[in-house]
Amino acid sequence: MRLILIRHGEAQGNGEGQMLGHRDVALTDRGHNQAIALGEYLGQRTPPNYIYTSPLQRCRQTAEGLSKQLSLAPEIRIAPDLIELDQGIFTGLTWPEAKNQYPDFCHRLETQSELESIPGAESLEQGIRRTQEFWQNIFATHTPLDCLWLISHGGILQCLISTLLGCDRLWGISIPPGAWFDISVELDQDQFHSISHRHNPMAQRIHRFNASLPS
Image (cartoon, rainbow, N blue to C red; front, side):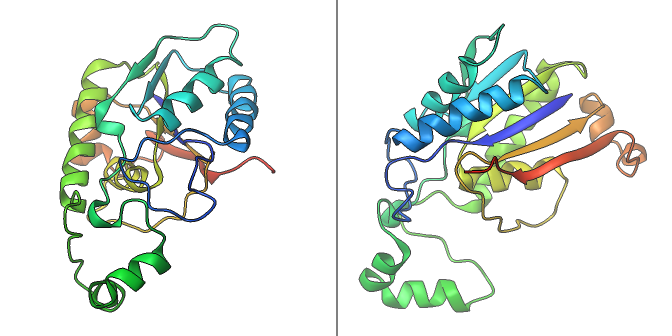
């Protein structure tokens, strides 16, 4: 199974560094252009037979821009599990603004080894569980011959990649708008979780990791 994981194009607030979370904002002109260019590039190399997207409009608009470059575009499917992590009290703020409004809490986040949950936000544990369920459904629904494009967000993509790679911890990845990951998993659901197949590099490959087209 070929999996192309894509962060949406530049959205309103990304340029300022706002933590958008569930805030439903549109793409900028640059974001629309990123989607068009990426759709043309990926469509010539790894065209999908399924497209899944977060329900937020910055992802739906990216999915539409991508699909318009395909000669044979599949139906775009809305996947609630691909929605961004809720940012709670940080929603709409930049990190400097958050530090100004919540200095003690932000100091603890920057200095403590154990992660403290953001008030009103979805925890990373909840995000991991959500992405685990998403992958279970994907492996149960699709065949090893399918190619899927998955359009999501910078925060939840970290959870998706961590669970897909079988990591027991979450790695921080700076994923720019319009970036993508290209991963092959040549196994069915039972084989993917089987101990005997986990270390066979012929069964799973990372083709591109956090790649971006030139600006």
